[in-house]
Length: 278
Image (cartoon, rainbow, N blue to C red):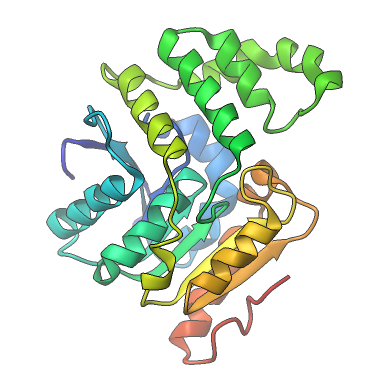
């Protein structure tokens, strides 16, 4: 594995899965993160014979490094370390934004692509929350980072007291196991998110792709996700009703639904049978 990216692995199956985690922030997944947050998603895939590589963005990214540039970093990693192709790429949230560009610009690097908790545009509110979180992390202000993070789950003035109560814990979680470039990189990612749009990339995606999102996502609203599906020529859209960004991204069905999608395609049935819009 290239030195520029940090990673964690799970499973020893014969099929390869690159998991691109959310952000902003490129700390390697801790054992706690794998066990408590990613296990519900990844366990069905590991049990089905995938070896999962949870790979962060590269370290010490240059100023102005875009989401499309990050996709190029992953494509180079797959070329150099996986002989140019993996069986499955799953991008979650920020990782899903990267996956759109990966599928558009580097379609040969994976057999199947999944973008979960992401679309081609992000709301101004979502950009603002993530930018304030990144500013807090970069400045070493865990309270500010935790207060911003709390808005994912506890929005509104009436929950401000609860966000403040939980801010130290949430701030520690978002800070993660920092490396020497972390405070720089989190701001590069936050700036890239503020400039992000994949509207031009989606029509260029020439491979089948699964899009998964909650229909109450404050970062990627239902109508934006549906537009992303319309813009992506061979997309299958799966919506989790009544779920927001965090809940949909950690939905216990997600890993199983990805498997249904992959096996449906491998069996040669039309896109969407067995997964479909929900």
